[in-house]
Image (cartoon, rainbow, N blue to C red; front, side, top):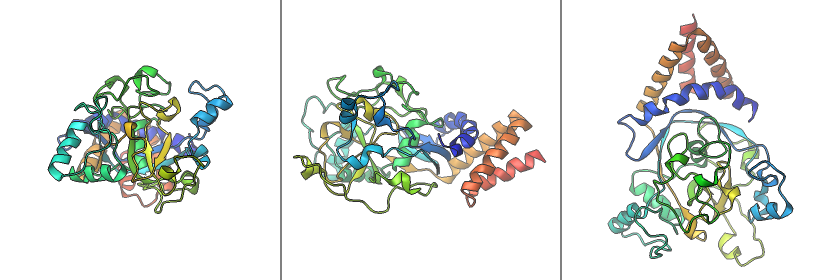
Length: 350
């Protein structure tokens, strides 16, 4: 974790207990979770392609098997860097066949690939075989949008920056990947593997489309840390000289989370992969969930609850909060949320 992440860690942990407060609020849309305003770590410094999930050195075969098609993407998960995101809502579950079917019926939207596949078309299984435009259209139909890549990762990792949604150790029983099940699982299954914000199947089951264009070097270009949106323009991803070039060459959108047919290396919270937005070539393992920008009112409620909790912790915690806020404001001096919190903390220490 970068130094900024260590310094901000106390503030993250101070806020995190109040996620439950926000989840219970009537302002949170049904079947969505609230992810509060604040800083978090995105990406990872250690090259995951050179080690196995247990931390041991990977063999040449293991590295080759876990390597994305594009050689440019080999190191695309780093470096680790901090981001500060406004509060937002995100679906607790992947979009189901049942929900997508209602959208198809009401809007006359064409059915996805594999809609008639008996392995994959049960009502509570995630819809698969959708391209980026299908996913975007559905989210807009719901009055929502696709999450940004930064929002998706924060919702998966939680305030402590976990390697997997449930913790930092691989538990094969908590994710549907590598064909360890015969097909996708119901969207509300495996509650024991939910992320800290209560999201199901953020590891495995289906890859999930996000809003961002894919750039394997984007993390190295020092992206703007506040409400990170991803690259403004797509880059061209070259071919591999194989039959899949017809499907993969060109500008790409990011997909996240791994799938029931994908390798173990794909289910970490930092793993990045990509697909052409008009392509559903990972069809049997490609779906999505939606997000929504939160109103300022719920952010205000959470900030108030956090401040009250800090008051109850005493002056020592106020001093600690002051230190973390000062560091955050050095990084983002014009952030009004941080300025307001700093003023309150200063008042309590006088």
